Structure formats: structure tokens, C-alpha cells
Length: 489
Ligand code: MN
Ligand code: MN
Image 1: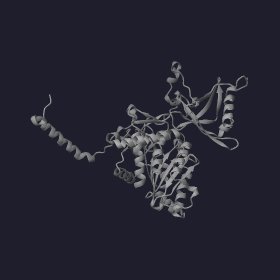
Image 2: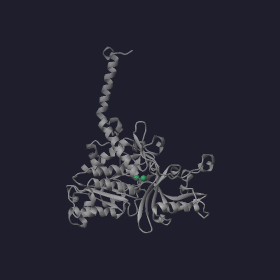
Image 3: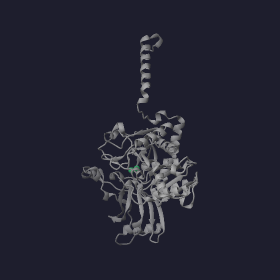
Image 4: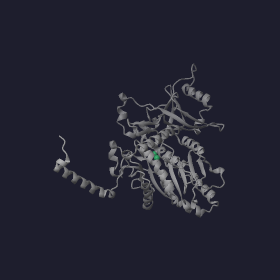
């Protein structure tokens, strides 16, 4: 039976005590840090924006699975928005929009601000390479009437995850005569796909008793690409030759051209929504395109910002940022120099160095989303939770913060103030438990210029797997964070 508070004094007393307790709690709310789930407070209009941004992101993921493809797509988007190569411009003025590609595998874009670069500038940095399988220099062989490509994996992977899934081959071949072609096979619905076999469970007793790193060995990541001989001919390697003949007819290449080729084997999956409620997106290479894409979008949105803003998208992060296309390469710095010289009008080394050291940067890279199934590897009080917004990380690194930038208190506080003012939802944490492992990003390399940089990014589930998962709310909030950062810091 229902009772009325007016006629039930005991219940009325309880209610007023409860209200008092509530207001007491509200009184202390500001003392506590709170990082709520975005979906709890998102308005209908906001949910619409989150979902729309996710649709564009998914199309971009499908069009740009490799660093070269990211570069190509981003340049084409930038050119449509009025960006031109920095090499074509002698002097830069506020509002100008320029880019430079780093050998087609890294990219820098800038929008010139109203203030001179000597008063500082803002950088968004992310990487556009993802874990994958690269072909060995001499990859092609036949074995028992089947033809395979040998691979060497790129980045940190669980090797067993790359068997028994549809694979595509993307990459650049430079022929003997110097002409080149870019191939993508396995992405269209009527394309063939490629495949790495695994052992049937019926005969898997010995395999399943090995430790995880050895269930599938590096030398076993061989991709099945064919199984028909040259008909009617009884020659040695007739299965391999049949494939070479096919490749020669279609692409004009011979076996030796594979020595120089950069062919990357990637999952043939398309990005898809996950869940009845479509909260998440599964896709290949969210790491780090889920940061690089919103960073690019935030930059392309800029008209004439107060300070000059730069987006730096680097290659080779997954193998340590080395090489002339990795973040350690001076080619990236050349762009900063070029910008400085072309906006300031003259180049003097010490002013340039001081200008660079006054820059502020967000180093955007994914982090592990807290997964309740694997809770034991994370400190729940210092973890990023799915749909709780962009994760700010004071430091990354491993084994006692080794190899990290470790951002300064003054700078972190400044970043937080700017994000809070715009109601950007952020959270914080570490990669995992102290002794559990760790990882590095490009921030340690950028901090050598003296600029202020903080690690941040989107939480990911199943990071470095062929098919990773992110939350659409985190993707959109990260885009907002980047925009707010470059416009206001
Ligand atoms: Mn990454
Ligand atoms: Mn990674």
C-alpha cells in the first residue's frame, strides 16, 4: 500500500534527513575528483555529433590502413581545404595553410596564426603507422604445391592473433626501371584475400602446451597466396612460377622487385560498430589513427588562429620512432625551421631554438582502456575507462618511468585549466600496474627541444590486435580536446 508523507510523519522525517545528507554531500563534491561516463550526461544533440563524427572516422579508417595511405588521404583532404606545399611559398602570413610530407610516410600541416612564432606555437602530434606484417625481402616460396609469402612482423603483436583471419596486401613496389606502383588487394568485396593457417585443435596438443609467445612462431607467419601450377608444364617450382607469371602480367614485376618493395599485410576487416547500442567501433589500427584523425580534423578546422598551430603525424612509432620518417628524424624539425624562417622573415638560430622551446604540444597516442576481464594488470584507480573521455598521462615509460618525458606540473595544470574551461571530459591514469610493463610514445623525442608536451589519447581495448575497439564518445571528446587545446593554450 502506498502512504503519503503528509500522513506519515516517520517517513517525512526520514526524507528530510536524507535531503540534509544529500546537501551535505553536495557541499563536499568539489573536493573530490570525478571522471564520469560521457554517455550519462550527453544531450541528444551531443550524441548526434558523436555518432556523425564516428561515421567519418570509420570511412577514413577503411581508406587509410597504412602510413602511406593516411598520408595520401590527409593531403587530399588538406588540399581541398586550401593547404599547399610549404616548398611552393616564400613568405607566410597569418591564415596561410601549408603542409610537408615526410617521404610520403609522415606528414606535417600548419595554419599560420596572428601572433609571431617567437611568441610560441601549438602542436598536435600522433603517429600513423600501425602494427602489421611486413614481407621479408625474399618472401616468395612454394611448399607442397602451395605458394606463400614470408613475413617479419612490425611492432608488438600477439602472433597467434594474426592467423585464420582475412588479410589484405597494401604497399609500394618500385620496379627495376624505377617506375613504381601502389597496390591494395583484399579490400574490395570481389578481391581475393590472403590467409595464415593455424593447426586444427584435434592435433594441437603440443602447440597448446607452449607459452603464448611460441604458440605461433615468427617464422610461421607465412601468408597463403596461391596453389595452382603452370598447367601442363613439368618444371621446378611451377607453383611459384605460376604466381610470378600472374604478377608479371598484372603489375609488370619480377621476383627481384620484391626486394625493395614495401608490402604490408594488414587485416582485411572494415571498421564496424560494436554493440546493440553502437557504443564502440572495432577496427584495424585505431592505434594511432584514432588520435591522428581527430588531430588532423582539429587542424583542418582552423581559420586564422591566435598562435600558429601544427599537426605532426609521424611514422615508425611502433618500432621506436627511428628512421628518416620516424619522429626522431630531423625532417620534422626542418619543417619547424622552414615555418619559422618563412613567417619571421629571417633565420637566426638562437631565436628559432627559443621559439621552439616555447611551443606547447599534445602527444596523442592511445592507451589501454580498463578491461574488467583483465583487471589484474591495471591499477583501477589509475586507469582510463571506456567512454570517460581523453586520457591525460603525466608519464608513460616502463620499469620506473624509464624512457618517458614526464610532463611538468605547471604545464599539466595549464592543460587541465584550458580543457576544464571548455567542459572537455578528460581522465587520467597509467598504462598498467607499475611492474606490469609499459610503453613509449613520441613525446620523449619532442621534449628534447625544450617544448612542453603531455601524453594523451584515446583508451583502446585489445590494443595491437588485428581488430581493436574504441568508444565513439572518447573519439569525439578527443577531437574536442585537440581543438580546445590548439585554440586556447
Ligand atoms: Mn601508438
Ligand atoms: Mn602502438
